[in-house]
Image (cartoon, rainbow, N blue to C red; front, side, top):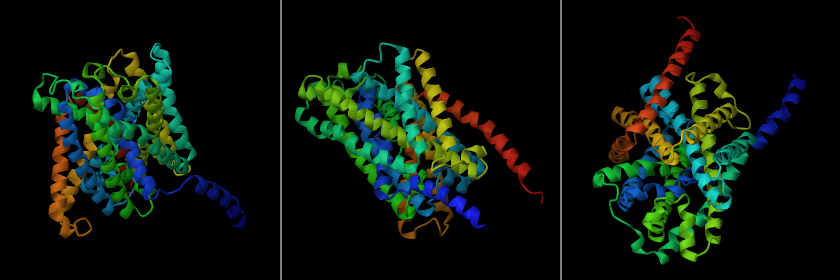
Length: 454
């Protein structure tokens, strides 16, 4: 007995050294780092074809994102377990709904990683011309995906450290453009108000579907609630603080880029924030500096999203709804989930580059827009279910009307995003979703076979 204890103690010490729970600052940085990832650095160019009406979409989207953040904060306060949307959907509607939330969120995470890597390559190209060779472009995208995976394999202690550093560094270029750019703002660069020809409502919906990618991550603290200290208090606060700070930077930054870079140039820009800084100061040094910071920011987002991508299948595997191999943890990180996620993201990246698409980032973004709305819809529906059921552990009587209004607003907002995703995104997203039904069928059969006979 004493020998076994002596042998096991060092292992526990090593694990504790590398696995550390997140406090409020790190949890907030996780939310901000995942929201302010790579999307904001490329999205001004992605929505420029719709015209400045996309700023209206950004405003509407911000209100919806804040409503979602408040709903997730309330859900996490009542049930602070790792898994976020999966946990809420399963508790409210059963195993199948929980599985769909877990599967679609997992798909969102690794498809998002592929999209972030593509966006990061655009800024890497400012520093090193990799676009001249497709092989070099693919190699760069894969390298940018696997470096954060290595940080995750090292343990949650290092994930948190990377997240703090990346979040601080990403504020420099964003604040520079968001605040400083207003002093160089030129309304002549704005271009037409509605440039797509789809009409105001169509343009707002379509641009909002692309812009949603920039707000993916509002649920980050809820998904990792099991790794947060005092989650009932800190998850909700981190969610709200992170979302509000990201929203303020997003709106100011996008307005500044629109006013700094001429519309016809912005539409084709691969690094709009670099172009904006060059327009502010002239020359290329500013753009190169922003490109470096943008790369750090995107690596930080990939670092956080890689962790999140493994947390949901880990929670589902604990309940027998995902293969048990996803339960394996090392140094606080579900390592198998990390390895599978980064492998799938790498394969998707290679496919999209070799398929010959000229708008790889936009295609991947729209797919994640659809898959993200599934856990969002299920989570907001779960909140409505809890409120309507009158359960004492779920309902705060003094906030019932406000909570119900926010949940309905967030649900309607998510439905609107599905409508704006477009046929191609819904088609690919549904394929991802339905592929999971086969996995659920197998896992459900195994659970029933393993259950004791009454």
